[in-house]
Image (cartoon, rainbow, N blue to C red; front, top):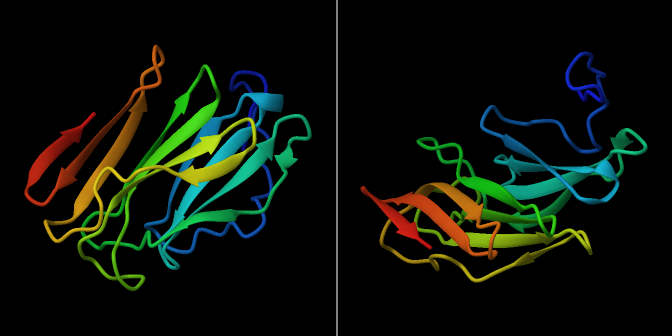
Length: 169
């Protein structure tokens, strides 16, 4: 649903192509895009272990793209179901996403990396950046979140790892 009057009224919309939430653990996040009053919808599809996105066309008031996969190995973990977060750098419109990657077959829990992706607003493409943590055997990460410093573009990531909390900046 969307509102173009500050929430006084709402318009129901048809979901983007390929959008059914297939598991209770599927998670979503909406972020604004700079051009055309567009919005990006990011989804973790835990049944197939992917991260994917679709774009809402703010001018046409409809989903302009079907869901597109940009990362794999984001499988469900029965203990912690929300393994990623995204943040907008307002001055550029770019989006950064950090996520815990399962290492192994979809649906397995085990040591994985903590990956970072960048959505470039100008080209509307995703690219993988350097991992915060590469695949290793020191324990699983969870609760990852990323913040972009609006003043200089520095990225800050927080996450849980094993039995302790870690912070990389």
